[in-house]
Length: 234
Image (cartoon, rainbow, N blue to C red; front, top):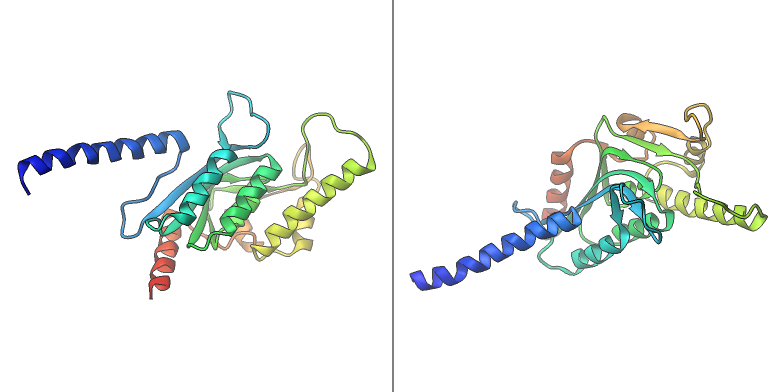
């Protein structure tokens, strides 16, 4: 290769590196890893923001940013798998459930890893992948659907909350090994949360309950993705 062609290629490499760095800073995600297989790393942190804007002092994951990423992952032939890393307090129920449905609908190998917390509507996201992992120190809070602010105290409102809860319970039980009865029991448990009903599960308990597939860390999740990709190739 001539010196001239080397000089013309160098700016392209720099431009690509800058683009990947900017993408990571803007979305909190890695476009694709540099290992043997190209894995897209998607992070879900803080509060899952939906139709309403969260306060400016809160860390948020905006669902309108995540949706096009998931579509791109499905369509991009250069991306072979998806790793979703969660440390979320929950947030907008419909937004979280929409993202969980999209993740579960990907045909490529997918894995989730719960670090810190996978609370509330973060639970459907945690179980949405083909294999879910959780570290021992992480926690998951199971509780009924709640609403911040004023609501109309009429039967129709209560019925709406009930239907929303049924949608969440149905999704979780279809994508994990926990039964609907046990999930509801954990959700309605009293005496554990100071100002609410529900249960807090650590990593080991989440696996024992069948909510999460496996106790493990980053290397375990990556190993699963690599094995899935290579088995598909065979």
